[in-house]
Image (cartoon, rainbow, N blue to C red; front, side, top):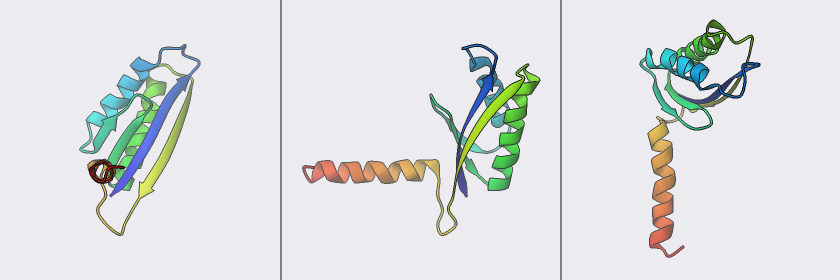
Length: 105
């Protein structure tokens, strides 16, 4: 399972891009992929091939909405030695924070 962080920014459409982001998220919602929307981007988990096809569709949705230029940045964490998920990565960090707090750190 892969975890992909992406940011899609339509350029030349003014300062407000939320309608474009909403359109891209609508594309994502139609898939069975797990995702988490953040203030600075979106994190998607699932099969890498399916994610990459979805990212392409999300990117294209901005052009469909009227953008003439779109900047999409992608970071891929493709771990194959064990199951990885957004929730598992967050839980691992929180467990370490809790352990440090209990140890007085």
